[in-house]
Length: 258
Image 1 (cartoon, rainbow, N blue to C red):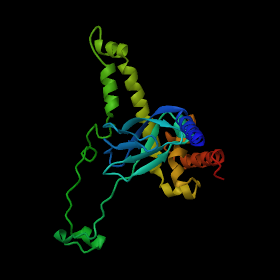
Image 2 (tube, one colour):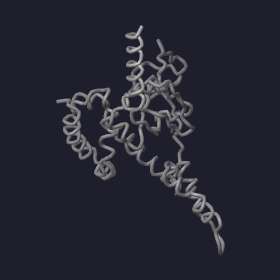
Image 3 (cartoon, rainbow, N blue to C red):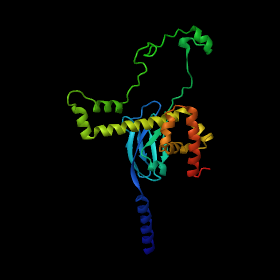
Image 4 (tube, rainbow, N blue to C red):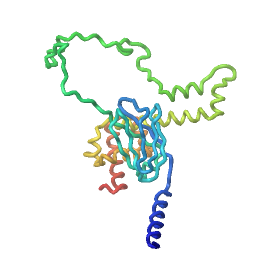
């Protein structure tokens, strides 16, 4: 009986020790090509804690080092991420999800009498001209549409009159500071997502020798480098790829992937 109690006591000690490690509220954002990221389920399978993303895809969930997070929604393929040290120490987590595609067994195109020969069909089809702001030559055709946080920040910091109250009140309440952080966070995520779309994931594994399960972690490793932002903003695909090749060597060395 005494031995059983000792084993139970030691087992309890190990459990307490495992749960008393460093803990933090990990913030991040889910993204997808379709943009429909609201209400994505985020489950910490290690602690059985869960949350859902807000309308913009942002989430916050308590994690320990080596916890496992599972992201799932009806419209996405389920994704599992282990909280590595680089993820745990990062300020934010970017989680790109892959849309679930519904494949059709057969496509019927008889209403348009298509033959399957693209050159022949182009001659017979009557296609109406595409009408957009750019084709019409409108002056605002290439104006970038502000994101919701950018619009909110503009509203919070603008105002007229001798004594504009709106910027003053938002500055005192801290809303302006919060919105600036949200805009900066959106730009960081946008920059990383833009790079991910430049190249297919298979290139990272075949050319950079980064395992598929480590691609997200590799980009967090790049994000903390101030040079990353400068290189990405050049929009030079060759320069960005050379940067990623150099960083992949350091990443593989630090993670014993050689």
